[in-house]
Image 1 (cartoon, rainbow, N blue to C red):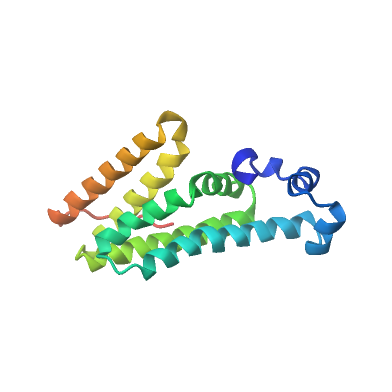
Image 2: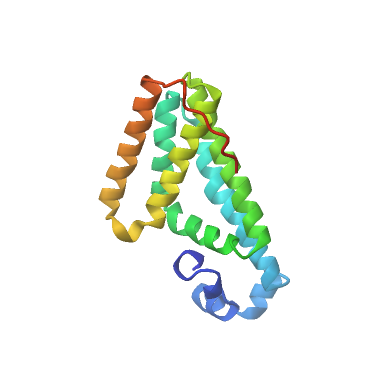
Length: 179
C-alpha cells in the first residue's frame, strides 16, 4: 500500500478493508496510527534492508559477486517501490528519515567494505560505493523511463563501469561525500 499510494494511502479504513480485519482488531495490535506507522518503519528496516544485507553477508562468493548479488536480491525481493515510498515519506517525517538514513549507512558500509576487500583504496571505495548505490536508487526512481529488462541492462552497465574503475584504478579519484 505504501509503495503504491504513498503514506497518504495508508489509511485505517482502507488498510482494514484490504486485510479483511475490523478496526477493533487493528487497535488490538496497534495503539494508534502512529504506532502502526512506526511498526511499518521497523518492518521496512528489518525485512527489506537487513534481510538483503544478511543474504549478501551469508554468500560465499567473491566481493565483486556479492556486490552484484546485492542488487539482484533487491530486485528479486521487489524492494524498489517500498524503498522509493519510504524515501518520499522520509522527506516529511523525521522517524522515517532517520530509518532511511540508517539503512543507507548500512548498505553503503557493506558496499564500501566489499570494494575494499577487492583492493580498492578507502577514498575510492567510498566514492564508488556511492556511485553504485545512487545509481540503484535512481534506476527504480526512474522506472517509468525504462522497462525492467532495460533497467537490468543499465544496472549491469554501471557495475561494468565500476569494475573497469576497479581494474584500472586511478589514484587521483577522491571525495568527501557523506550521508
